[in-house]
Length: 192
Image: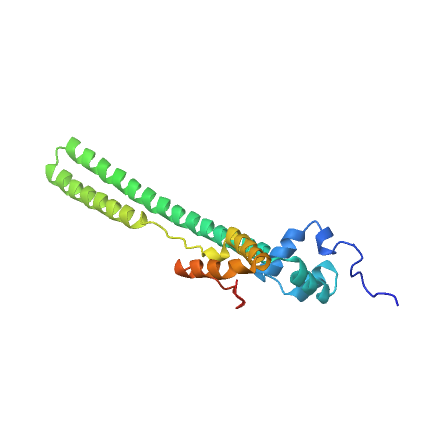
């Protein structure tokens, strides 16, 4: 009896042969498009995309893409914050220069009352700049969970393989991990 489809034929998956393979994988993992939309866009059946997702996209690939996306978002947000900082700093700098010109003009015109008033304005501007710089200079904290780390995924898989190969190692390993308050379960609920 002839076998249907290309299963076990040695033929590469259609998505693997495409030049936009990485973008398709990112679309699947990040759910930027539905599997149906992806299938229509590249001219294949929905089930082919679904099967590719289930068999070809590993947990390591998924976590790596998610981590890259988080980093990209953080870098974008940091860029926006830095641009805002520069806009504010430039505005205050411009204001300080204008007040300094007023002071110089008042001193040249021998108007000490106006010069004193301008100096008070400059002092306030400089105080505001210092306060603003202090507020903007607060550190941004980025938390990345160890369970999302590509290295942890690989290490966990290695530990699982060793425990399968040497069953006696499982109990001491789990005990030590629990003692050090390390996560010993997978996200799907299965134990190490």
